[in-house]
Length: 210
Image (cartoon, rainbow, N blue to C red; front, side, top):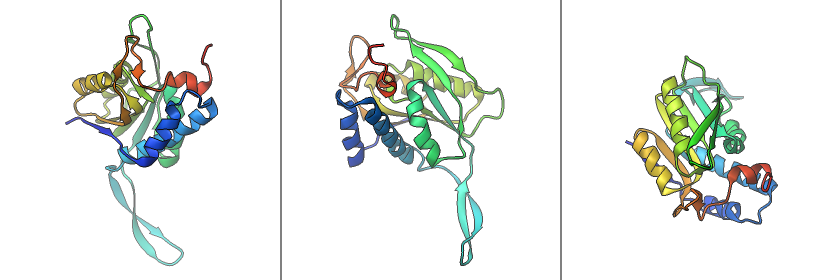
């Protein structure tokens, strides 16, 4: 069954408030995205499966544990790139596969312009990362591509979400998990999340007004 999990934590609320602030400069915005990505990934990976592994400490040999499954980290370009490095620091063995999707401003529908997913050997788990889950169109397209690849477990990590986007993903992929820092009020007439934080890609890469 699909689960939508808004991670309730004081650190998330603190960093998210600063992230929303329109006066926050791009360099700080990027750092805040990275901090929130780590907190989201920590929560989303609590159920990863482990295999026993023997290790020798400076004193004795003991039984430890290592991650068992192959994990793919899938950023939706371009805004999702800001969440990759901190999660990769947590899971350095993860594979990174990119999906390029943008929203057509006239139709608000996703347009795919880049995909390099291989045709075989899918991982056991894919973590799709995108700071904003707005209409849900890009997320659904990304999850559909991963399902065609054959990935059995799918998780979507977004910093903020609109109820409309959550509902669409839940309807199309009832077995996927959604992990977010906050579910906001709604989409406005231009399909932007309200109260939101503006355009995450522009604020991350300092391209506002260009």
